Length: 238
Image 1 (tube, one colour):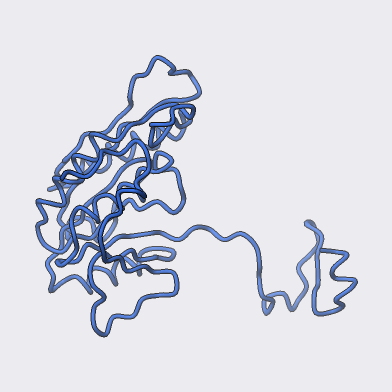
Image 2 (cartoon, one colour):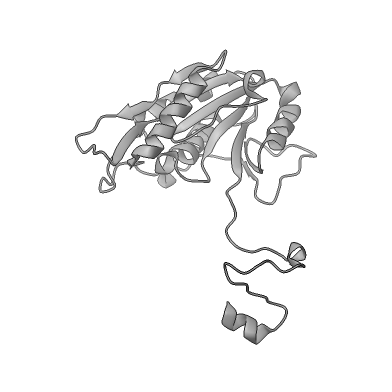
């Protein structure tokens, strides 16, 4: 960068790490690594429950939930028992194994991350009205060590009004279904966006008239392609 600044001239100013910020630095355009934004999914009434379940499994359980792009909270419009059945089947059937297992979907995590996951499980268990659909926790494997451990995915369902103000933290392979009435959906999403550093939306179902997606938001509608399923997840039922 220093060499580039000498070639470009005053349009590019490169400071040393311990150098005092120039007086006009507040007007500069900052480039570099940014913290990942919070990703929240929305399952609309017209969404295909099996497509949503498989894509939520990929978004939440991949890399055992350590991916900064992971989805841990899902706003569900109304009661969706079929969606819950598909999610339970995937959460119970996902294969957690060592990195050299070609049939494993997710692998081990460091013990400090496992501790954060257990704390998140305990916090969500204490939320009034929160139902545990799949009980997560540590998995015992012959290869367990003091440095690495395996985690079983967890699935919760809660009424949106119980967590809208201050939701507990999420960590690891943990997914929370927040059930909300359709009339209160927009208000609930605005409250979630206001409470986060930045929120990206992953919406399942047809695009809604008049609803504008952000540049990084996604609207998912269509069939599930079996050929694109990663290993370690149960195959769709016929």
